[in-house]
Structure formats: C-alpha cells, structure tokens
Amino acid sequence: MKERHSALCVEEAEDVVKELRALLAKTGIALPSLGLDPVSLAREALCPLVDLGRCSVETARRLAAAMAVAAR
Image (cartoon, rainbow, N blue to C red; front, side, top):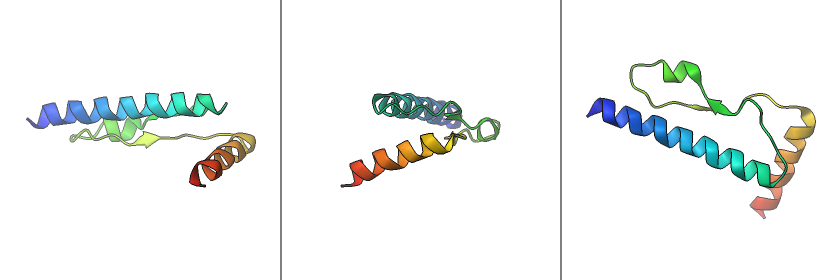
C-alpha cells in the first residue's frame, strides 16, 4: 500500500506541474525550471515537492502581475 500511495503522490505532483505550466502559458509566462524536485523524489516516502525554479526579473514581474489580477 505504501508503494501505491507513493506512486499516486508522484502522479499527482506531475499532474499539478502540467496544469501549472499550462495555466502560466495562457498568461505568456514560462518557468523553464518548473518540475519535480529530484531530491524529494529520492526519499523513501515519495511525496515530491514541486520546484518552481529560477526565472528572470521580468518573468517574476509578470508572475506577480498575474497573481495580483487573480487576487482581485
């Protein structure tokens, strides 16, 4: 059961990364390093972290502006 739960955690994390990438693309924002954190994948209990990665100042500004609009 633990292995199955771990596989479901990884699948859920991969799905949310795809969803986030698609939603960001609709606003013209790309986070090139967006993905699963490899260190968290290596742990015995696989519940990986999503790594948003690094981005340029311009991309960070666009992301902040999109979030500000969504927060209204």
